[in-house]
Image (cartoon, rainbow, N blue to C red; front, side, top):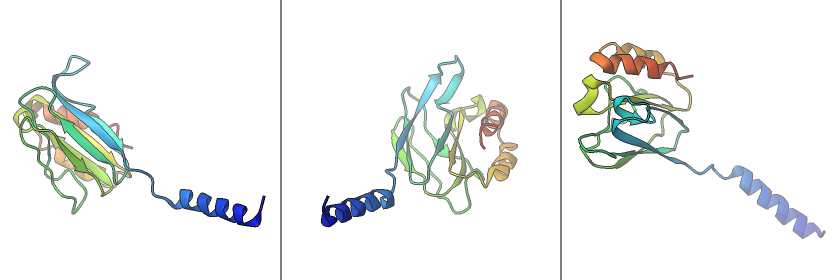
Length: 148
């Protein structure tokens, strides 16, 4: 092999290593009934993603939305709120734990958690969970057990 070819191959290798990883897009379905028979759920209800990844919320069945819960996001992270029956995507750039709800079905336990990278604000989210009504509090508490 020539010196020029080896140099070009080495530079190409360095570029591949230095190139940022491609961001992924995940999908969360909004459902009246989940695969396990639970009513009013997000599937999956817990997601772990990397900073820069996106989550697309899909209203598979009518009457649902997804929106962030107060006190359940990293400091200075932007809140999000989708409209009823409309698909939308959220790009997560700040590390931490994000709790979200379906506004019409919060009391029925329609909540979810997205962990973006490290879970530095888990204790804050757990404290805010105590303010949730009914089954929302119970399900959120169970979801937070998956956060590592």
